[in-house]
Image (tube, rainbow over all chains, first blue to last red; front, side):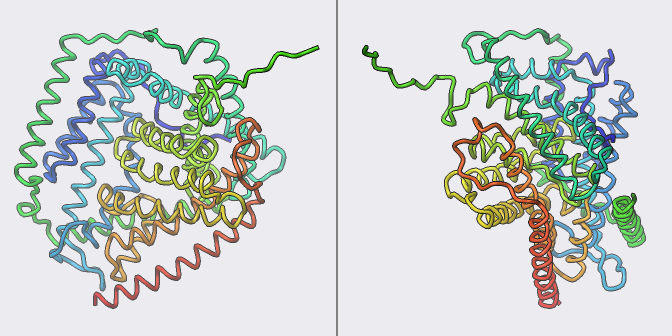
Length: 297
Length: 239
């Protein structure tokens, strides 16, 4: 059996300008994006950030895998908008602009829904572009330069290497169980699939531990890395520009009290109503499809 | 013939309080983190309505100790942030809380000695995780999680409950099922581990999952009735 969806953690090899930027400079942008996204409620800034991050994808040649990975936003986005329209996560009073039977629909809720969605979209796209254009070893070598303890670095690096291995093993074990006539879905398959994967993995740990011990993993001294990451002047420029832009916009945003445009942007009742219907229908469709799929033999 | 007195074996600097080599812990933790991340994918492959993404946290917290479990929790969400974006980072707090309760529960409060005690421990983990997760879900995702629980959240909102209450009500249902099943899967895995890893842990032998599933179904239905009653009461009061 193959897993339904492989984890989108793989770096997409390439030699684009985005690939060549130093991982630390890219990290500055990702952290900056998160800081800015959570310090503003200005949807123009949030969606401009998302568009800018998305423009980097074709430059890096990762548009297709990025769009595929962004599919996870569909259920979250649709339910987020639907829920916010009927119950905004902001303080009352709320402005009721339409209703669906006894259910009031709020314009402020739609605005705040767009804010929350914008934060998620912008942060996700920039993070995925970074992950897809950065070799994990380069990232961890850069972490080491930031004095992150090498044991912690080792743990993170090993985790990323183990995930695809375990995914493959789960597939093999479930196929083996099915070929023996055992159930391959539902709760009856939980223990026969989880226990062999977990126990097999932990037994492998013992061999790995001996291997590390024999190579002097815990010894003192300077740790070296096979891969070398150098920072060029252009990387410094990218990092500093990112930090300045983000710091400037975040400060300005905080000074203006999150810089919300909720007062300036008024959604029409028709727009709120249609958005609610579309988002609720998409979410209900996803749930229905999941239920039907789970009953499918 | 005389024998020379044998000196008591000295604890190696490379052994920790669990009497396990540090290298073993350093390799066991990434395995638990990866299993947390893959656990969710196994659950979707088995078409289960639960997440099962804290089993690695439970195993590490029980076998290695609560704070190692907390580290697994932090690394799980740190690793997930590299995969699915940084918005999953605040949920590290949920993982940490789960790890601490599982770890201290089994190792200090001896709640792993019998099946009923372990069951109650998992219920406590579920409630604590929901208490931590609900505000994060509201603040970061506006109450949405993208799964079937959102339909319940919407229903609770429609009958007049507030957003935090609705998210809490729907989350407690999924969390109870998830943490109880996850806890007992962890118990089965711990029983199958090499004795060198589990000899110092006072924990009951695993039990068939069928009885646990029936108990989970009973609890979830009971809690569902209570939260529907509370939501309707809150709705009437608001009206």
